[in-house]
Image 1 (cartoon, rainbow, N blue to C red):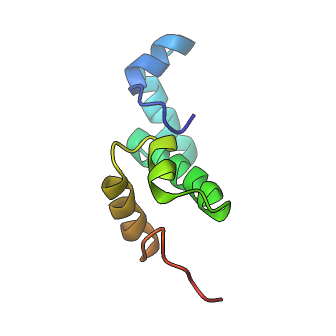
Image 2 (spheres, rainbow, N blue to C red):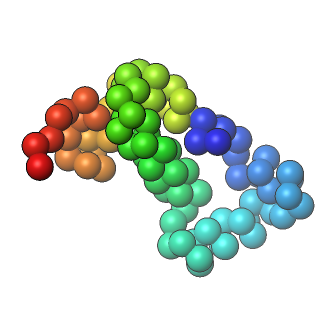
Length: 89
């Protein structure tokens, strides 16, 4: 669930692993920190929703961002344009 805001400690408790162990595994297996990984998952899910013409504000909330403006900012930094931009291919 990309909107799941649980901390690495909370997730670790659920599966019986420490946050440190999970952090090392993420870094070792994926080369990402937990916040980086979570952002990548959220952006991936956002792209799917945007492709289905889901409104940007709805996408932002379904993907776990606290506001549409925060989502738009992260999206622009990552992809170089806003999520509402129509790109010609």
